[in-house]
Image (cartoon, rainbow, N blue to C red):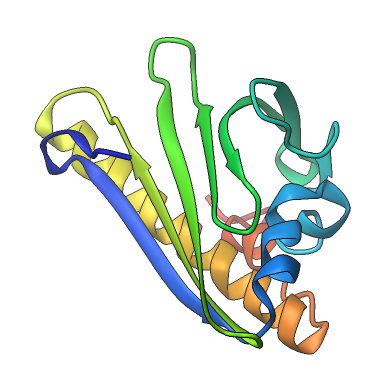
Length: 155
């Protein structure tokens, strides 16, 4: 996907699992819920909407899958109706047991300060998601990174 005017965030990580397993982890909410959101309304399907929920924050988000290329790429649209951005996952198999995942969030809107804030938050968030995915897929560990990013009682 093209990124407009360098207004994008990117996070990348090597995950030592086959590309098919890593791809499924982001496609199937039964797996994704182990390291990111807590509930999904169904697997991602091209040109379909899916609801993702973070129960610990009382927050849900509708995402629309724009591109789904098995074991290669996922592209979704998400965000508030007036601030939709694109998120693109690229899955690059380095060999039969290792996959390099790149997540790019693009299409941010607003003044410079708002865009900088969105890029920072997105980079941080997707870095935590990839670290959580790596721990879960490689070691079957649920690190609760997304849950613990904003603990209750901390202003």
